[in-house]
Length: 108
Image (cartoon, rainbow, N blue to C red):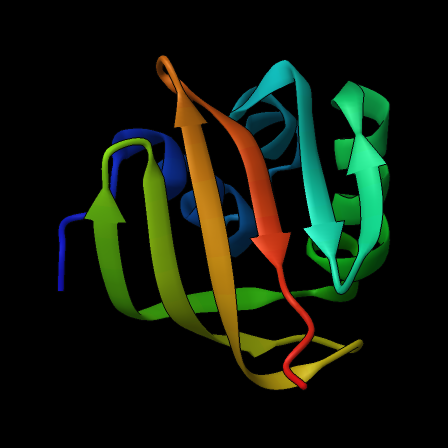
């Protein structure tokens, strides 16, 4: 498993620490979360997703595997929350020292 880029690790830590401000700060100003095709963009969109699907849902994220190629890191992760429990794939794109995006593609 590749070492996670710092920006990715900060986002994972923010979820597990239930720290919404750190979660939002992990993204670029125009960064976004795409969860099964639903895109939440910019600081307010990222904050909204954290509130409804991650931190606000009591989420815990565990990275099971990771592979980084350039600015893109693909992971398999475990997720426990009041919204979803199970494993998913995730794709992070890093821009500078922050996340440009976090995508959870549909699993079918």
